[in-house]
Image (tube, rainbow, N blue to C red; front, top):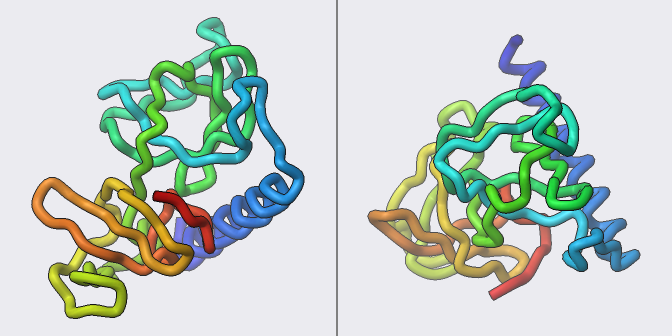
Length: 171
């Protein structure tokens, strides 16, 4: 798959997620769990199977082999959650394998354009984060997110992250 085609697929997936999230938020859409749909969470388990349907009898579509990756839940069925990753791939995962802890990927769509981690919003550059780095989200104000890695913390522009909606605010 060419990089250009992949970029447009990711851009379309992000645009669809943003549209669905804003419509759902306006409608106050909630799943059977009582939590908002769609919403971002992270993978809790070191290995987590993503299945073709909501049950262990469905085939495995792929397996996450790294915990902490952000995913978007957009449907619920019992203890199963239908998720999508940053590429737009979707499937079903057993809910207890997910965590409400918020994480984000730094510009996974980028071809090497690093994001600047600032000491404060609009402040001096403290570090440079390579595309695909997983960060813990501490909070977002709609424009900037406070993030942390195991080595450094600071602020990144919200539009440079996948795992938080544009304009989303939380502490």
